[in-house]
Amino acid sequence: MSHQLTFADSEFNNKRRKTRKEVFLTRMDELMPWDQLETVIEPFYPKSGKGRRPYPLSTMFRIHCMQHWYNMSDPAMEDALYEITSMRLFAGLSLDSAIPDHTTIMNFRHLLEKHKLSRQLFKEVNKWLSSAGIYLKEGTIVDATIIEAASSTKNKAKARDPEMHQTQKGKQWFFGLKAHIGVDARTWLTHSLSTTAANVHDISETENLLHGEEAFISGDSGYRGAHKRKELKDIKAEWLIAEMPSKMRLLKKHPRINKQPIRTEYIKASIRAKVEHPFRIIKRQFGFRKVVYRGLEKNDNKLAMLFALANVFRIDQMIRAARG
Image (cartoon, rainbow, N blue to C red; front, top):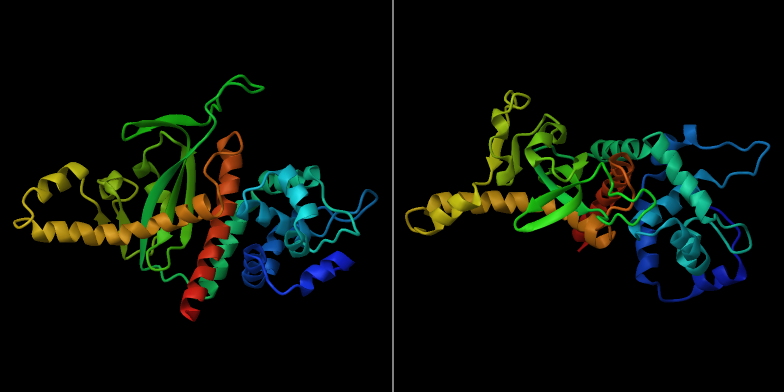
């Protein structure tokens, strides 16, 4: 992205040590398929007319990505563009010209929500990965995670979000939504996503998490019996579903007799563990641990963008691991 640098920005570029934020943004700048993704948004993006000239699409989309990478609200993102030079340069901005305010940043997000473009961006990232030969489609691991929402009624509506729900996990109760994902067993990349209220059982979304070319499907004990469901009974893939915890406890009481079944369960667990990687990226690396918006549709839009960026983040990890 070409833009005029201020004296301060030029000084910043000439300094010797690069911060972790600069290094990360440089890697993302080189790796992200910007043109391919911006082509998805471009038909819906405002054109220059009689009103105020819109910021370049590339600038607004880069700001939107940084919001997800660093878990920033619209006002916090506006402040960061003024305060953090590396983020400002990544967006193609400088202090001697206008900086998008939080309303402009919010309006761009609303544009993506209105036209469900984050889902399309998620698909476009996966298409980019497939065309690069990254997806091997050997097997799919399915899983779900609960993301909590605010349970307080101290808000304008004086009520909890009606589209969220409470559910019990172990001995704890949670209120929020559930993100269901299908992950490539070899690369740990997310190829499918479904968003529901937290009380929806994992098994009910299985059909939406498969691409249909799997040699095997792996999941925890919550998916037991999935192969018997009407919508899944014709799937030819091998089902590697974990035994119930109660059965495992019984097996472990006689480890010598049950050596082979226990070993089989450990192999299943080692395969299944990879599905936690995308969840770790969005929760730990990107800081998304709490639902930000009301309603499942808005949050599905955010999750689709998060998992699209998590896939690019995973590719970056693979590249760096290959380089040693």
